[in-house]
Length: 164
Length: 392
Image (cartoon, rainbow over all chains, first blue to last red; front, side, top):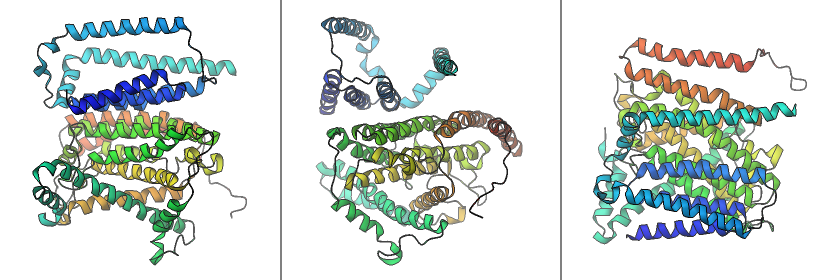
């Protein structure tokens, strides 16, 4: 384990803990942004340039901003008490997600051949893979996202007509 | 071509790295790449503030700053001293840590953008494989810092300014990225250095391969510059800090040097995005005519940068501020379809043989969509000569 990895891991974990424990929701969102940047740093440390930068672009630039907007536009009371049943269900859900992810990582082929993933011209590889082998899943995801976008617009528009 | 002058900074750096102790070499190399950027661009910021104030003054029939130093050119020094000696006021209700971090994050991310911009031949801090993505990732982080500034001030005007800024920047980020995708597609690379290399070469004296000299490139460049104006929150897209409506927007509650940092960050962002426009469309550091290549590449970069800054100042002095609904309509109903058709046109361009026919075929879809969108968005309204009650 190299020094950059340890620093980045410490930042990521500390920010994740802060995102769960801080009192103000906006602080939690900002801590989440730090956590996501830390993850991006881990990707960069592994040599996955594009993945790391896209992580910042998508998560910090879009997802965190969206979360922050949602917090500001929807809630006026920032403090909310957490019941014990909520914490229990949260623990259960996160344990399930962790279990699934851990199972996926352990059973995937990367553990046996760590050298197969060395990034050689990673940008080009990603492009070729997306446009040739995975072109159908890519198109389906694109269609799905477009449908979601149009759906969101339609929902917003209906609201506007009702107020008229 | 005078390689000695052209490469003078590169050679100085190599010399300095070579003559430093072996253990220090990586640190020296990194420092010598970063420190010039930290020195040159804030210096350019100082010069630009004077040029901008004088340029705007000329357009508004007044003199502008002309008291401090020769022709008022020491004005930024006076401004800097003033902002350093002013009291730094933090509102009682403010979120102190976020309030403190926001201007720092803004300036940091603005400087980060310079990492991938080729300032001259062999003069790029980091030739990343995904350089363009780094640029957009850094500018995305900039939005978060603006939000932090607005939210932490606990002032409704700051909050409104931040909301406006973030909404505007997100809306214009989509066409900004899409219009650069056309270039990335044609160059076949996300590395800024490769994109500049692909635009090298002359046809006679003409820099034939610059992307701005293709129909999609010209349209893309104009769209890119409009989005760049919006991204750097400059007039006519300066709603986030509209003085007549919300005082100063997201930095209402900042004073002293933190205010100066916001000012600096904004201008640095403008220079960086102009630098990206130069890289993507205007051939980077290449000379605009083949017999002018004897002038060093970095001079050409800064000449193009100053030319774009002059356009920014000109536009600021000319156009009135948009309304929020006009801003959003313009982004989603005009800019986005236009950038999509620019990508389509760039794709067609890639597969047609050279010649006049290629130019025409690629220009036609852009022109058609432009006319259609223009007509439909006007909605049958007629533009007439405006009658003034008091001005005439």
